[in-house]
View 1 (cartoon, rainbow, N blue to C red):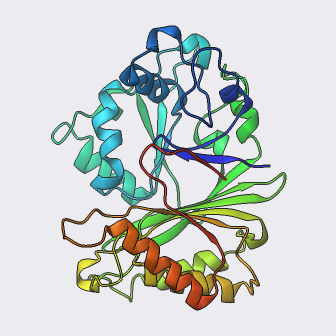
View 2 (spheres, helix red, strand yellow):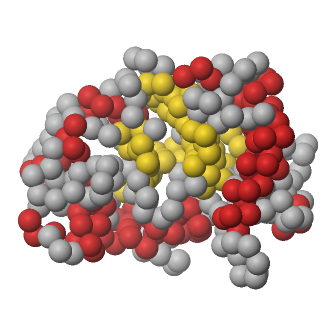
Length: 321
């Protein structure tokens, strides 16, 4: 069974190696093999995970709220524990994966020696990997994992997992969804970057609803074995489209999930966990925005008889599907 896990470090497979820690556990669900020198220091442990357990980045688009962590951590983001992770004779660069427009933005506007040092050009930390919408890739190939790396179970865990790159609309920029598929048992997880209504949408070029419906209709999507959907709901239903900037409200999500249900003739969605992300904090008084969105999603799900499981993770929370 494909077991995809999620925490603030991102998406990764839960492997036996992560569960056989001889030092200290990272949290109640997963254990990283922390070396003794990290004991008692959350910063040292965060740095150890970043440098030795984050093997690459799949970017949905290049807006700052999605790449700030990569940028700010980049000076410290390099492999150090080569004896444990990779062959001593190997020099491994972390791949930054994205579509041509996303990579172009990083090259020209971020890692350009003006906004931020060009650590990609420097040549000992990162490499760009450009993928096309509609393309399918072996995850091991994208992350350059081989049988030579010294993480005992990592290559085997991802060996049969592919990812398909699917186009989305997000205001004036292209956005991306990633469909992960474990071919052995066909379990799937679908990760959406931002999408949704915007007054700046040029419907002749890109309709967010049509793009979402294209994802739901894609021949590679197997709804019977779809385990999880990671998707954003940024703002509550009382927000006008002029203030959405290409994001979803609860009503937009529910209507799109109803389209999925109808397009694929689904009697039930109870086997799908829907992870709600990207809720934007509000400075306004009144009900907490998270509570408002939870209530509005629940009301919409009842109205359209959508029986999926909705999850609202907090920062640092660990979740396995």
